[in-house]
Amino acid sequence: MSIAANPDIAKRYVRVIHRRADGFIEFQFAIGHTEYFAELMLKEKDFQAFCEENKVIFLPEGAQASRHAFDWTLRDVAQGHDVHKHLEDDMDP
Image (cartoon, rainbow, N blue to C red; front, top):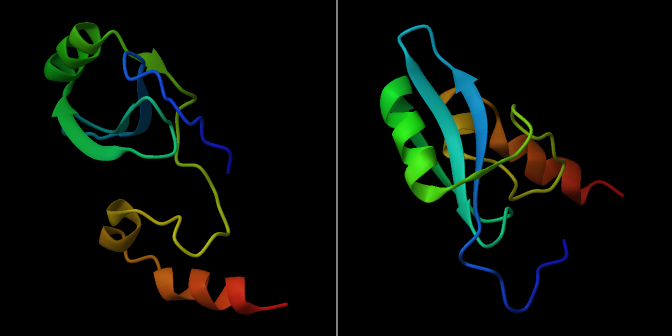
């Protein structure tokens, strides 16, 4: 992972993870670096306002697959994914 020493904190990024049937949008919001993000959830109208207010750059939709031990999210845990399996996979030669 390559991270710029001086990130441009004026850049805001959003990756939509899931559009739920109840009208909520699950998404990741990052400032400066796309590697560090907060997981958020808003109703469609509020999501649109949030994105406009922050002048976000949209990233491709959907969760990003990774095999790194610490690349799991609270969403993974809530959905019952075995995050310990990631740790075991990383230790295999």
